[in-house]
Length: 134
Image 1 (cartoon, rainbow, N blue to C red):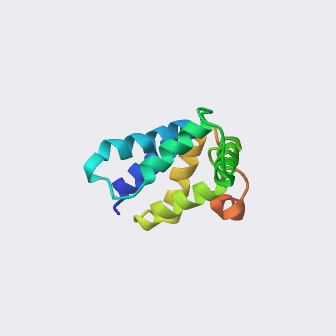
Image 2: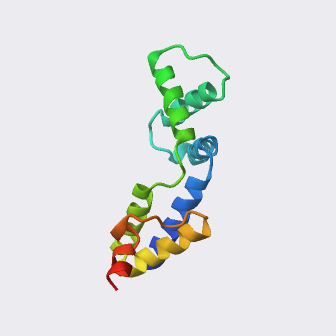
């Protein structure tokens, strides 16, 4: 992956996380539906459609799996959009594409600041150790 592709991936990942769980589910369904014949031969679209109807309350839970789906959806809705693991993975993507570690931290810090999600005090994850050592 080159540097431009890594930045595109970062932008997509952030935009995807800014969507609500229902919007992400609708996007996945739409993409699979639009793929039509080109879609892999898996029942994924039917499963997503069935789960979506359950989560939206259009059908009642009838199995342990249905209750698990509802619990997972509730957990996903309560989880913050961005956590430290997300940012570490994005930084790793940038470094894998040729960004220097400090450059990658600066890009991530800039994106976090623009989202109103400023960097915390987790040490190397956001460059604070380098700043303290200077």
